[in-house]
Image 1: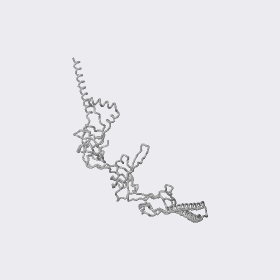
Image 2: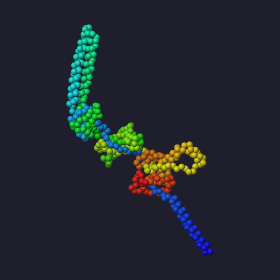
Image 3: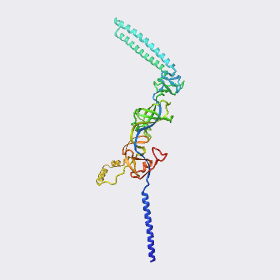
Image 4: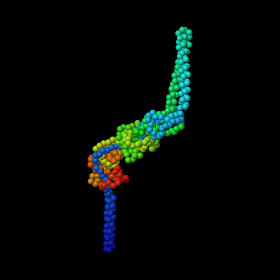
Length: 422
């Protein structure tokens, strides 16, 4: 009897322990399945002015600049200008030693005078032959020989005259004058230096004369962005040397041919040169200064917009419940075109998350243009919708349709455009 009582007591104890263990397990299971609400910040969708921009970097250069290279070779015997000096059109820039070209001119002049004398003598002989032929004193062949000699000498005279003109022109080219009003922005040669002319060679770049009153920014724009830029677009220019100022500019020229760097490598980049005329004239801009420009390609006013970080992408989830008919039809399509079906189902869509009470609702949207802070929404939500604007981790990774959320104020010091970095 005592043994039966002990056995029953043990059974009751172990039963109670088992119930407790099961209860704790069930409690732990449901506790782990219940996720805490995700902390988010929100902002209402509102009407704004959105300006789409393309950012690029480059250098300041004069709109008009001329590289001065002599057309003849020789030693520089006069160089009256210095770098940074202003010159007027027609001012003397340099003079090349003319001795060789003077001698050549004199030689060509002597040759021309000799040819002229020969031509005049043969002309007289030709006229005399005409008179003798008219009297029947010379034959046809003698008359023709006299005429031929005159034409040969005349051609030689014309050739000698052309050579003299060329020699005079070469002599004149030993003196180089400024082709325009401007500033000597670069001086590469010194007095006494020998330079090459451009008649037969590339020539020596002695100096550059530039109009520094008309400056432009020359920037390289990516091939994906250049298609949305137009001549006349307004531009904000930040010059590294004047950080406290933003200059105004306008797109004046867009290259029609690309420049490619790193061709055939993984670092291959294709850009297009865009020239931007600087409209501000109150700052001294020098060739070669570094700039960063924001080209305003399009502005839309009073459009529905949300913070740019609010728009993210999600892959749509396949519906688990389908009618038998739809399931059979879908199976047939999948068998016929499996690749196309999978790609269509897995294609990410752009969405925003709305907060309704304490729940996040995922809504697909169609976006338009954007600026640094806001993006235009063409379809999907209405004005005053409460849109999740942070944190970055919540929007990019954590939130799903139906997630429980807790709205909190944005942390002080958090970035406007990105919230918390995850």
